[in-house]
Structures are given as C-alpha cells and as structure tokens.
Amino acid sequence: MNQLSYWVGEVLRYTDVVILGYFLLLNSSLLVLVLLGGWELASNVRRRAFAGLDLTFRSPLTPSISVLMPAHNEGAGIVTAVHAMLALRYPRTQVVVIDDGSTDQTTALLIDEFDLTETPMVMPPDVPVAGEILGVYAPRTGASSPLLVRKTNGGRSDAVNAGINIADGELVCMVDADSVLDSDSLLTVVKPFIDDPLRVVATGGAIRVANGCTIVGGRVIDVRMPTGWLPRIQVAEYLRSFLLGRSGWSRLGSVVIISGAFGLFRRDLVVQIGGLARDTVGEDAELVFRLHRRLREWRADYRIVFVAEPVCWTEVPSTLAVLGRQRRRWHRGLTELLLLHHRSMIGNRRYGRIGLLALPFYLLFELLAPVVELAALVLIPAGMLAGVVDIDFAWRFLLVAYGYAMVVSLLALVMEELVFHRYRRWRDIAAIAAGAVLENVGYRQLTAWYRLQGSWSVLRGSKPVWGTMTRQGLGSASKSSG
Image 1: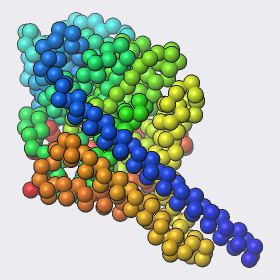
Image 2 (image 1 turned 90 degrees about the vertical axis):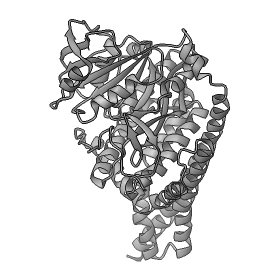
Image 3 (image 1 turned 135 degrees about the horizontal axis):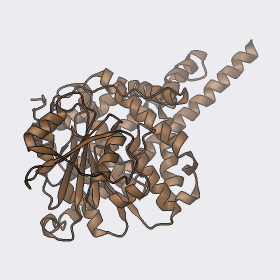
Image 4 (image 1 turned 90 degrees about the horizontal axis):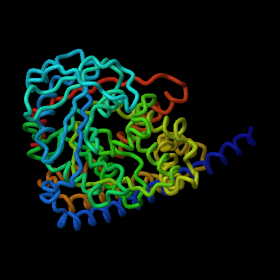
C-alpha cells in the first residue's frame, strides 16, 4: 500500500509540473500572437491613411461582390437586415437571401417589402445542393432589391451553396442574416484583393459584440458595453481571440479560421473545391482548411488575410444555456476538422506553416485546452491532499494559468483601444478590463466543460444538435450599461 501511495504521489507531482508547463507555453504563445496582432493593427492603421476607399468605390476594376445571406426563421429582423446590406457602400453588389426552409414569414415579408416576383431562373449546378429549390424571386423593377432563393431545409452549408450557384459576383461574401456590418466594411475587406489580385483568395473581417450597442436601421450608431456580466466577459474574449489573435495569425500568414458571420472568398475557387461541406458543423473553418489543402497541393502562391478594421457586429449569448450550446457546437466543429476531416495536414511539411505551425497550435492549445484545464482543477488539489504539491506550487499555478492570461487579455484591450478606440467612455473600458479579469473566475472553467462536451459528442459519434439563440432583432437598441 505504501508503494502504491508513493507511485500515485510521484505521478501527481510530475503531472502537475507538466500542467504548469503547458499553461506557461499556452499563455506565452497567446502573448506572442497578441503582440504580432498589435503589429498587424499598427500596419493596418498606416495603410488606412492611404487606403483610398473613395478611389476603390469609383474604380471600374473593383471586383463585384455577391452577399449571401442564409436565413432560417429570421422573420423578426430579416427586412431590416436586407435593407442594411443593400445600403452598404460598395459599387457593385448583389444581395442573395436564401430562405432555408423557414416556417415563419421570412419569405412573405421579403416578397412584400421588396416587391419580388417568382422567376423561372435556372440555377447552374456549380456546387452540389441537397435541398430542393422551391422558387427564385427577383424584383419586378430594376430598383435595388435582393434576389430570394426559397428551398427546403438543408442546413446553413446547403443554403450557402445554393447562393453560390446563383451568385454572379466575382467574390462571394458570406454573412449571417442576424449580423450588422459597418457601412464601409465591403470596401475595406476587399482591399487585399485589389492590392494583391493574383494571390489573395479569401479575407475575413473582425467580429465584435453588438450587445449593449444602439442599432438603428441595421447600423451600429453608438458603441457601448452591455449590462450583463456574461456578454461583458465575451467582449474581452472577442478582443483577445477574434481581433488580436487572428490579426497575429494574419501577420504569420497562417489564417485558418474565417468567421461565417463575415468572410469574403473568390467564387471561382469556392466552386472549384466543391463549395461548403455539409458533414460538419464547422463548415466555415472547413472551407478555409480545404482552401489551404488544395492550394498547397496545387503548389499555388496564395494568401488568406484577416482584416481587422471592417467590423461585423453580432449578438453574443446572454444566458449560460445558449452559451453552452454555442461553445459545444464550436468545439465539436474544431474536433471534426482536426481529428476527422484534415488530420493528415497536422505536422505535414507539405502544407507549410499551416501544417507545421497553425494546426499543431490549434490541436495543442485549442482542442486539448479544456482537457488540461479541467484536469488541472482535479489533479492539483489532489496533489495538495496527497502532500506532493505544496501551497507555493499552487500559487505559481494560479499565477501562470490565470494571472498571466489576465495580463494577455488586458494587453489586448490596451492595443485595441490605442488603434481603434471603439469604446469612448471610461466606464466601458473599465467594464472590459473587469471582464478580462472575471473571465478567469468561473467563465473559463465553465466554457472548458462545454468545449469538452463538444469534443466528446464527436468521439462517441452523436449527431450535432444546433439549438436556438434568442435575439432581440437588428432593428432594436440592445440594453447597454448606461
């Protein structure tokens, strides 16, 4: 028995040291990404002074864009959302709404608002579509109006694929029907295509939290913090992970995730690789993974770029139930991509920085992070009870795992405010800083549990459950912090 206790103690001792080293490496990697992201933001500011958005707007060489809006039971805000997309400042746009089997008044509202009529338009089968196309509706006049595709329910990927087939733009912009774009977003996110037309194949824009902001006519007119602490914490999280983190990956030329809420792609390439996959809940990231895979295999010289300035505003979960569904789905998608769909790319020199840097990072520090996080919450107290871990080690763990993470998040906040200064009230900045601290007390551990559940659902072969997210609608002003 004494021998068994000895070996259990030794295992706990060395396991706890490994966990400490893991968090040190994790947070140091995040710090490097945030610093690189700050460098990228500073470069963007310098380029912005010479961006020439007016010139881009007037140029006959500016590529045409088809904005694809998949919608399922979005009747509460679809009319406002479409008006907002039609009003985006861009010279040549086509707005395509794909009603993916809605059971509410989504189609009827659009037909009535924009005076649409059914047309015998034939959709080319450029990419496979599983759902049946029930009708295509076009405006009666040449006025600025959307094109509407009505189909049976097949999921978001299938809806986007239907939109790709009917799109006539050189580029396709995939947006969520409940997202809000800044008016110059398309002009800014298209700039890399104009500056480097032979190499850029996709760009993604920054995603920010709409909760608390005043939204009128599908536009954010006043940026403020939400009142609830759950969305406040997510503001800090989004700044670190979705703004600075992805800017850092863009600086490294290794962007592997473009949010489905706002991404711009070359239509011909998306068609060439078969459109969006329907066998994963992470269809947007899978498209980017597959672009990297195919273009590397074709030995193409290409770039996928994250542009921090064009902003897409989205409503984040305000309840734990909805947050749990979201994070399970996100992590399920990541697990599917790394363990099922694109496992052969990890550590493979054939895929360059994607295979040797980006994907190993996502495997070690995204996919496995909840496993290590939750293991630490069990093993370190167990080591203390067994007498093999002292209180000094426990304090070092808290400092490295959580204190270090707070510093990285606060640094991300400082960098963002120095460059963009979106939050103009000191109380809002203080609320973000408080959110960066509180993220490590309960929120982080809870989301680790949700993420672990997402991975486990893949490993045990269960089918994905999407759930729903209650939203206020884009025409309303979200409740802010005052």
